[in-house]
Image (tube, rainbow, N blue to C red):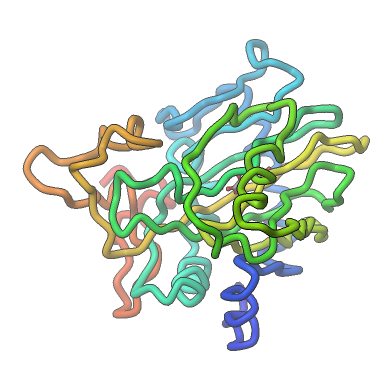
Length: 289
Ligand SMILES: O=C(O)CCC(=O)C(=O)O
């Protein structure tokens, strides 16, 4: 259970665009999640549902790349039990000043020793297929993290930089900081990079406009993390931009006759009036209906 965030933490988040937290989940949960990572990357999907983006599988995936799956929660109830936690939804809403939080997507990320970087990017730059197109994320480490192990890194204050269109190869680019450094130059500032170095079970929250990425894993230990990307509970599809950014994938869940985000795919995990998508808890128990 995450403790309620203090005003000082919320102010720090507003100034820096991120907030590091020493403990988000228990060591027991870390252990269970690591097993799920093994299953998902072997192609074992407990619920029978294939995650929305399967970017790496054992046997076929490029061994030099960081392994990544998006929306592992639909395939695996243990992953779902973490990324639909109401306390995480409440913390995200408190940091964003939102009425509530929906799960927009999760990321299952596994960076074995020697594997390559993930491009520096701003999450919101890919998301104008919904409005308000804001994202606020909780990144959870499943291993002790260090700069040399390719932990996530943020540029302090970069959520306040001017808009940059997304560019470059996301998985394993040669220079993972390239576009962030160009943006810093346009801004006229020297980027201040902060590495998230936490024990397993710790992590960070970040703003959707904060520049972030992660380097090569130069250590001898794996670096695994689970990310809950939250959107505002009152967000809806923007029909003018459905085919932009990750809308090419997630517009498939749009209703024919309205712009509502369907709670089966984007569940409300916490709202300030006490509402939470009722199907979540049935899904977690494995109930069919
Ligand atoms: O875990 C990483 O290396 C990157 C994760 C990421 O891009 C994100 O959480 O938005």
